[in-house]
Image (tube, rainbow, N blue to C red; front, side, top):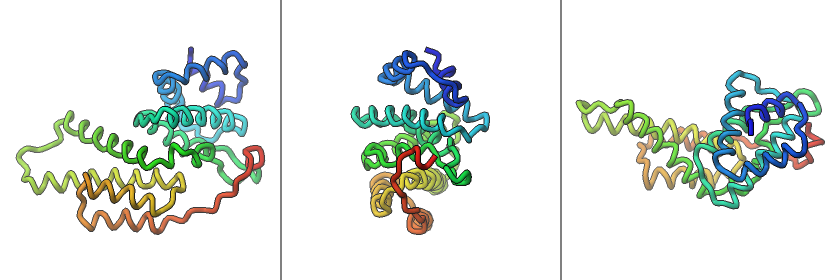
Length: 223
């Protein structure tokens, strides 16, 4: 199955025949096809076309919902797939009925039980930070001549940068601030030791973020 071609058809608002649609849903049962679909979608995203049509957003939103529902049922916390989902859902958008408000893809999954799971975020954050440290080690970016204090400071900056950006990701799903605070502080307390001056900006960001009250209406009424 040519998932790149399917992605292009969806984003260009070309119709996908029912047989091909059924095949796609069947293929999405397997990780390699989920990953291939999201990777193809991401490659198109890197070309800079973020605004898509109402029809394309709804079609893509329904496919993303299917992937997320399957992940939830499987209790699958695959960081590569989660990363793609977060990027796609915070990038692709269509204009609402007023022609001004941007309706992002995240609209279709922000209420999913999957992304409201503390277990998911704990697993995902740990995997992302471990991957970052592994990459740095592979690139031999640790200087053995530096003191232990210097290395600890470097680690703290890496932890802070990742925890801060991942806190932003979590809050895009409008999760209760107390829960976000608990997720981040549990990780800091048990694994990522940060000095108070680096914890404070994260706490301030959580506290100062304002959630816009969401009105639950059918997609057809917001697009």
